[in-house]
Image (cartoon, rainbow, N blue to C red; front, side, top):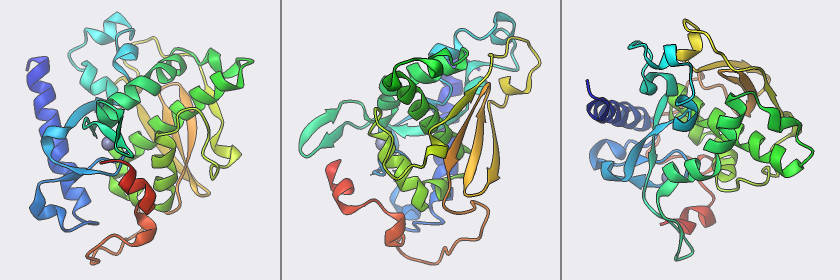
Length: 254
Ligand SMILES: [Zn+2]
């Protein structure tokens, strides 16, 4: 399949799977052809979503040549995927960011994420600002990877709100985020073919209210306020208020 066709079919599959998952929590979505963006929380139609490569393109481009040319590990497989919105973010009536959450991630997080994937030297930078930028980038990728793996339960639980709020504050750690979540451990990048991470860039393990997300060669500890495997009340017509955005946030973007 050509790259474009392949991308279109991945997008379609994700759209279907993500909507099916979301309908467990918000049954209204079954009939309305909308999907919630797991970053901004807006419910939008298909044309406002784009395929998001979780491992940024700029990092995929410098993967070892032997891995890039392997038909078993094309970019879409090495990256891990999710849908993020591309509808302009309007903040209190003025244009906040023109191309939605998909480009917001590109603008603020893909650079720091690519740095970490190439060895994470920036984590020992004397500049706190530089370190924080990389840690927040790692945390946001950890969050999105968890949504890709476990679905909207990650978004809708209480910790999901903290992470969604963090998404729009790339420079400072959320005040409700403990120090445990402000650390990244990075190792040297993988360089050999045949490694598991080329087909499966993320792995997850749960421990004491957190998920240790391993992204290829680095680890970030993402908060989780509930076990994503625990049964969830799905009979409710609307999402309990503790699972929704704070009202001032939902009205901030339109
Ligand atoms: Zn969005």
